Amino acid sequence: MNILLVNDDGILAPGLAALHEAVRELGTVSVVAPDSPQSAAARSITLHVPMVCQQVHVDGRFWGTGVGGRPADCVKLAVRELLGQRPDLVLSGINAGANVGVNIFYSGTVAAAAEGALLGIPSVAFSLQGGGEMDFRRAAGHCRWVLQRLLEGVLQPGELVNVNIPMLGGPRPCGVKVVPQSTAAITESYSRKDGPDGQAVFQLREHFDYGPEQSETDVTALEEGYITVTPLKSDLTDRLRMGHYSGVRWGNPPS
Image 1 (cartoon, rainbow, N blue to C red):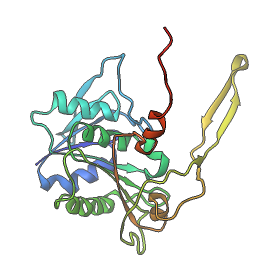
Image 2: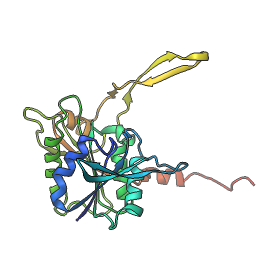
Image 3: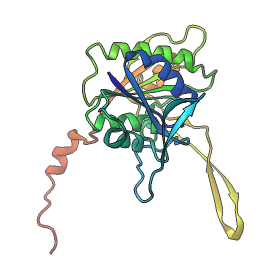
């Protein structure tokens, strides 16, 4: 099996190294990742400037290809140009911090996996909840355990799965829950400074809160200490509303 490994924290991130160690026995693993951190890059791609790609060596050994672009760029380039063989599986992560709820829309980790799924390759995004010790080696063991079960006939070509590992320690993780993405809004804030020439300079603060939660979502399950597994899809069409919009008397467009 040919596995493409990517992330959004950068090619030298410890989460990427831990995931590589956990899955390297499953097949041939190729690393193509951003050459610098790209958190919250979402599905953005590089259009107007060239992307520099260079080989990265660690301890004198070839590690992977660093890309001067976004996580989605890395998957596109890997599949279209850089790899000799098309990957059978795309794995993204392990991200330093959870990717649940509406934050999935901003996540470069999920975006990289989504790009793989869009290309017809089964893809999984892995993240580790922050707030405690970031034991990526132990988290990678849980990722491998979940992946093994996904590969036992569940994960299909073009499917996208988002997996989050809770903060580790004590009895955590408590188990696994297959749960939907929370759509509760988040409350966030900005710090403001007055810049020169009357400019207002804003910086998004790191702390945020989720709004009122439904029960049994990725946000609530992760907080309860469960590994969360959420199947996602690239098709954003609201099919329940299609009939309403189709029923509008559109008439003819103006000439």
